[in-house]
Image 1: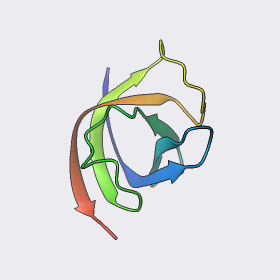
Image 2: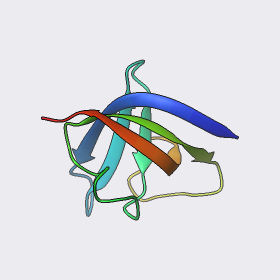
Image 3: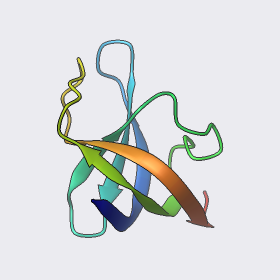
Image 4: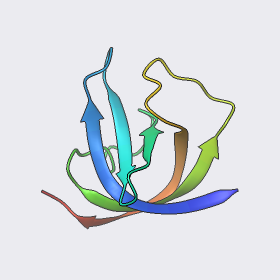
Amino acid sequence: MSTTVTGTIQHRDIGTGAWALVTDDGVTYEIPRSADKKLLQAGQKVKVTGQVREDVMTTAMIGPVLEVKSFEVISSD
């Protein structure tokens, strides 16, 4: 099932590093490293549409993995 969330991209210094999307509601999703490099910019506010992957585990384990289908940058630092 597709979901759309708005939040801020963060880089976490866990292990080899991990990317997170922290929503306006305070929910943290892990964004795979394979996501578009234009999305993986710490501090930018984005609207992301994707699918939560229940079948994927990561070493960072900072939240559910959100497989990004599309995104829109709202603002950047």
